[in-house]
Amino acid sequence: MTCMIKLDKVSKKYGTGVFALSEINFSVDKGEFVFLVGPTGSGKTTIFRLLIRDLLPSTGSITVADFDIVKLPHGKIPTLRKKIGFVFQDLKLLLDQTIFENIALSLEIAKVPKADIKKRVEEALEKVGIINHKDKFPIQLSGGELQRAAIARALVLSPDIVLADEPTGNLDLETSWEIVKLLESINEKGTTIIMATHNTEIVKNLSKRVIGLDKGRLVRDEPPSRKASGVK
Image (tube, rainbow, N blue to C red; front, side, top):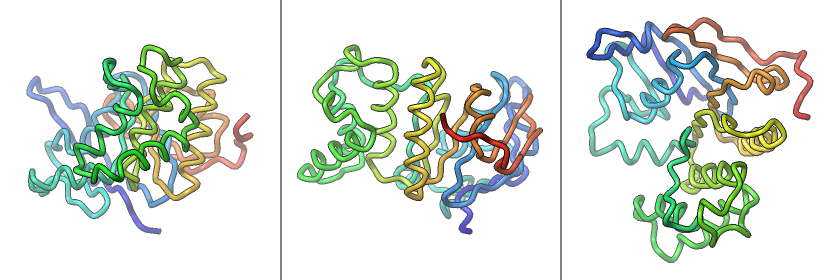
């Protein structure tokens, strides 16, 4: 298997002296689906910020899709981020723009030719099942539909990796399962997925690798369980 992500002895210490992460070691292969679990403040979002080079580690090395994160020149950060789709915990959808415009913005920033933008946005919206909402504004969509829009934006540049930060955090259980099934279908087409979650019901019922953090330390790294009952 091709290694997509590797963290080697990674620590992150903030100016206050607090360690957000301490000596983290793990790797993720191409095509894996991994749950990243742990209580609030355990370091999950810090790991995601390191992977997109929004932060640098205090010590250790990080490789993402052949990019050395620590040595990566600033000018190469946009190239790295084209490889990674990020579903933010607070979605970060612009309220004064339509769903189509929100997703097109990622392509415009990436300097995709204007002639290609409409086709690619509509393809992404088809994948997540909300093409009929493309001309609506975020305030007109339900929580599940907003999450699908955020996933469409993460997919529109055809990334190798999708990082989903608590994508079911504010959703009811039925909608949460729909979002996880959507992420599974994306993973089945070859995209590597890491999903940070507090949702123990979903983690328990899906046969996926689980990496657990507590107070900035890696406390669990379990392979997929054969006992998992599968998606409901």
